[in-house]
Amino acid sequence: MPSKSGNLSLRDGDGFVVTPAALPYAGMTGGDLVRVGPDGSAAPGARHRPSSEWRLHAAIYAARPEAGAVVHTHSPRATALSCARRGIPPFHYMVLLAGGPVRCAEHATFGTQALAANCVAALAGRRAVLLANHGVVTIGATLAAAVTLAMEIENLAGQYLDLLAAGLKPVLLRKRDLAEAAAQFAGYGRGG
Image (cartoon, rainbow, N blue to C red; front, top):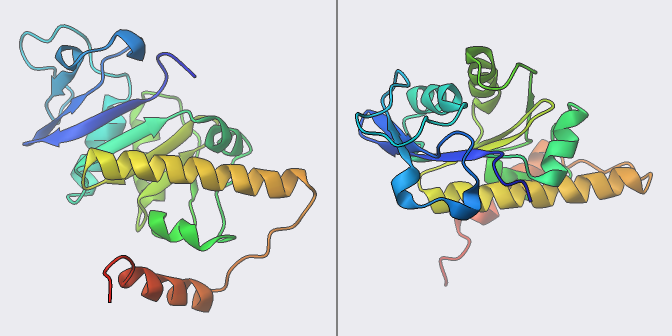
């Protein structure tokens, strides 16, 4: 597993708390997190610089008021798919957890405003996006929701890549199929 790649954040008032730049996760503690204003400025007394992707987090929070947390990871299978600049089509109904097929945002250099803008554009109507030649971003109302979605995207990416590696052409679900699955999800886990 990468020791420093990826980052996560939690909305905090008009700003957010984000993982620090270049600090290995294995030794990180809560005191290493960086409180950041919407302009990227670290709170006074911060021990570390904020993640180089602070612009991406700030842009998502500005565009998506429902986002309480953002997870950005370089998980192996989703990142591999992003390096082919392919999204995840509706080959499985679980894409609905992301709001529908997972798009792949246009490429831009990491840490730039261009990457942040491309990410926000590709996230429109979705809760997950692949970043071309980079990784994946998920959002959630809570950190647990964003992390769970990131794991599900990794799982879907792996299944999709397995199909492609086997030389199989995935059969894509139709809009009607997805609508029926969405209706099933609406009552899922409510008993009765």
